[in-house]
Length: 605
Image (cartoon, rainbow, N blue to C red; front, side):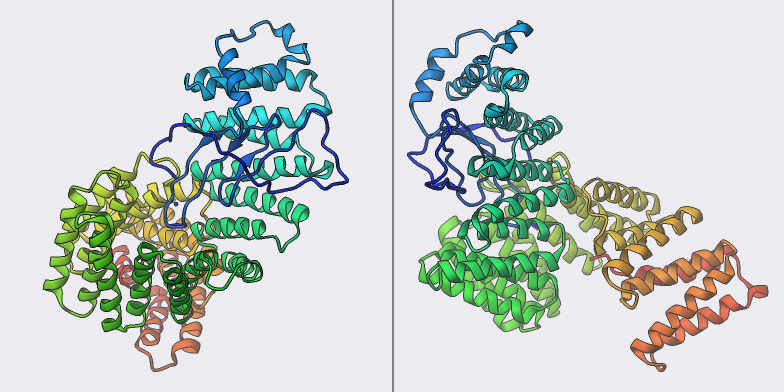
């Protein structure tokens, strides 16, 4: 999430040859195997496969934790006979005669060639061509009995497309694959449909389309529950997988519901203090933290830490200690936060070395803590030590970790009133992340933070450009229903006000109002700030009646929430009185000065 958040570059295809596999959806004793559709080995948790007749399978993109956005494509073969066949056939030419596609034996033959080309390491081009030709032949003459083989050939093609970064073509192939299956026809079709929807969801996620991704995951979960029942441990893994996606999309209520279901299933089927329960509680803590329920988050983290200690997972215990420190910091329990951070720092230094990004991440948290306690010199010292690590990260460090650390340090410099230094760090972070597929939400966050910095130093044109780019990325990735998106629209509107783009500002404030009313409610401080900005804009446009109506609504809400003696209520009364005196309205410049007050009141982060 996230954040929860896709690889910086396309990963190469990897060939694994496992000894055996456990099927996600098993055939019953009363349902014999059809002669042309052998049983397919299914993936382990979070490694959703494509169904493959002929005892081979395609593994889909694999999602890691909610904070890592990495995914991996691989093709996996659970047998050696097909490998030998592929080696023998790999030098045969691709059939180019279109009439030959009507041969019913050609599709399976080309599918073997595709598998052989993959196993032999000849590169994806030839395997892709074989897989495409196989799907064409199976579509033309395969009939109903060959639908699973058709789905398998399309899964192979989609995996190769994804590995090449051609995500749109991968999506098209997977949509054809799921359309070729019918879960009502038995476990093999159910597995094929489940695998197809999960792989399709992963591909959408890599392309930054979280809304479509979640819809596909949800459909896959529904198929799996129908086949296995809603209490199966494999259903729990899919629920957690989907919950992570909801966290990335900042849909925390649905994420919490799925995570609770996962915990219930694991309590029933796993021993106490299991690793599965620890993973569930870490995710639940992340959700509670995002919702502001820090006490519940702390409880889940402590239980997760105890489970990891019982299983000897020292490195993971250190990661949980960071989360515990973050929660203590949110609860203003600074001494306990320092203790947790120092514990994690000691473990990371001993296990990963002094220059690992994990060490830098703890230093950044200590810098933030010391800033909040007023120890600015210590805070800046920790920031500088972390930046030295990020400047020369150890081999294998991810761009996401380095960019995320720079963003956090930039936020500290911003709080220290050093916007120029913050901007330099954000520009470096943006350079690391801007070409990363599937990281649009992260890039949008960097650009939004840069927009705030530009606004602070009076560079309103650059601020508007940064906000506009961030808004466009969030629209494209389907994240138009989050509070963050609403606040970002408001900030862009304020930049437009400073550039005298009043009509554009009004449109942005109106959209921000609709989003924040839906996500935060009408009495939330961010929503009230947008109301006031919109009223001032209407006043500047001559729409005085609408402005007065909004200000009266804001005054009523503030009086109900803050009382009549609050200074904010007095300010609202003054604005309403000024707007009512239409014959004494000031110049445009005066109205913008009124608006600027809300720039300071409305927080972006």
